[in-house]
Picture 1 (cartoon, rainbow, N blue to C red):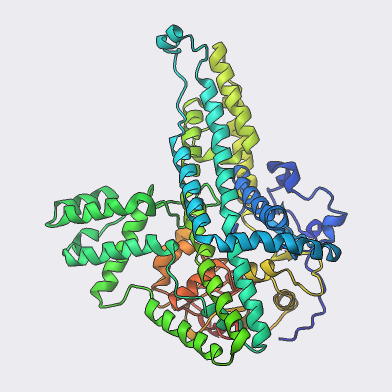
Picture 2: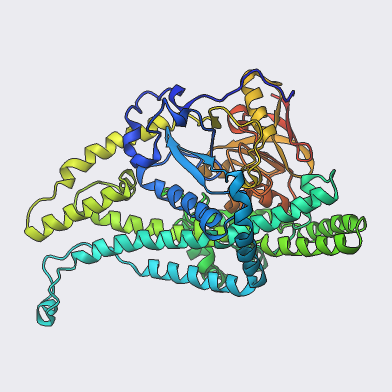
Length: 608
């Protein structure tokens, strides 16, 4: 494909048609999250869709994940670390999807930020272990407090003990206080989330820049491979399942896993088998905390967590048991990854000496130290924190279901978080005065109206970007995390103009070349359809899809750069990957035979 294109722009937001049935969609979201002036500046600024983290349409309450995540990302760039080249990211919701636009630092401000940036970053790297230990304590304490919050129906009357003690409150304040505290605790852990994440990216980018300076022709993948093969807590849930599968085969429990959708029946069959209680004890021990894990990414209220849907981990265990019985290896190829890492490091070290060698060693060691956090934080925040958060949201919603405000626990997701607080006050006021709340007469029809709009928005895939891209994209986080590079944006535009029908080009994210049958997955619920030896094609792969990575031959995604979750996980599983294709999940079809070249970033349709 040529780098030139006759199409100079993506569609403007105001040019995108609203799907039938989604009219008035803008009023579902907070006023500050939608484009308010579609004929002005927002039709000029370049925006890209972050389908890596938010691949489906937001319900109103779910915007909280996008708002907290992007705001807190920005605060560390702009206010904490004072990164010279990067402020935060402006973000908006358009037709239900999240779009981002990085905010540049004016050139004349860059020099004045450098001294403070160097001082702050140096302090973190010099005290990395101590500060990271403190981070774990803070995050776990927040989760524990979140777990302690309760949402219970209001009683017929206050206990007599409250009369005797002179408490002088009716208990409804607890409902409001705990809701506010739940939101605050979620926000708190999202602030903690980014304390080390940007440092992980910075350490890698610093090492990446040095390698490009010392070795101008070094492939991007070779730099990434020099920090691979590390132990990551994000892989621990999947590793626990593998250990349980190995134990089940050692104890001869295979026959108990014939119907894992029946969780109670499966566990009962295991418990009654010889050695079964030993396995049950190991299974129970693994759940805290490692089953606080979702097959999604934690940003949506519909994400299914292992701890609440144990048919999911039991199904993965059954699959591992079958593979073990067929004599297959189920562990990650860590030894091979480390050997390849060490080989590449030695190859480039041999080209250096003196000060250059010392600098190379120091920066590589720093990048390798910080690198695991780039994935590990996912378990503590997106999975564990958000799993508890969504569970508590459903507990609160159950109070409204009992009061007749709506019929299903997930219906609360169709309210904004401000509207939920209004509904709480509606509920407690009517209870307090002995009257009838307005909610049961208002919310059922309104929720159905909103559900129809969300369903209509969900019939369209988002545009990968909006408006005219800059001549050159230079913001490092945008390139490394999202794969939004000058070349890739041109590729997306070329595809719109009509490129090679049998080839899709993206970022060469994980090395190797293979052929296989495509399996297009648009939702985590479809993961059960993935067959051994297939090539996974998705908008984005979640780090929690580990059990699937052991089955597939390669992965292709719509969005993601060298430091995206998809790229990192594929490298750690030794799988070829092409990320940032823009449209693979909507262009390719299940059943086509593909050739995926993770060294060149090309995906070719061989048959079909």
